[in-house]
Length: 287
Image 1 (cartoon, one colour):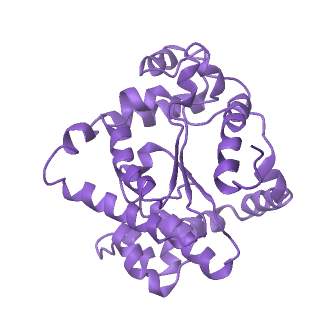
Image 2 (image 1 turned 120 degrees about the vertical axis):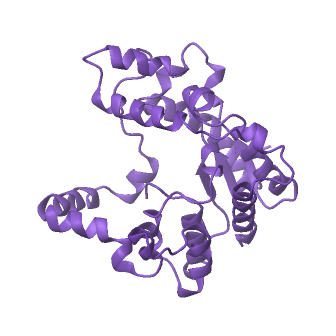
């Protein structure tokens, strides 16, 4: 469910507790930037709608408060508004939507979980280290359109980015940062699995960490998560800089500015799976 954020994690873990009490543990995979804010926007209301309970209205309001002047906020109270864009798209393109659904339904669940679909190409022609990659793309008329669109998104995040390194040393912390830390820690402590959840910080290309994320964001993310790890509420695996160890070939593991290609997923999985197995199934791992 693209766009899943902390509100969704809260609603889904509550839903799993009620409907699948047999679940004993799991993995919450995100990136350091997902700890910058407690909400990912009003469109997340459409994601939680099938799973939410009336008792979760307060939790939802803490992430996406109702505002009578913003029609997108009405989704916090009414399902029709939460799905208004989806309904509009279906009415406009009914056959393409049905065909996409049929195509998606033919993919087996096990394939979604365990396959490693090909993603042709890599980023070595452009780079992932800095905004110079976007300069190269702009200068090349034959550059892929999807990468140019992503560069526009990258550039939009540069202006006005907060300096988390400076903000995190303020006393008291800015209210927004206090709220973010409180809601994330509250949610992770509320998970009732018999084994602490594994919180995985996924690999992030250097361009995001060096040029677009606010300074100190990685450190701020760890300030939120480390206390939870120390108290035993979570297991933390920080793989943010995983591909930095291969400085010359790191670009070969990404198919665009956001996603690892098949080679990157395979390399990361080979490193990650033994760690996950040791945390989730400690008695099944050979000494």
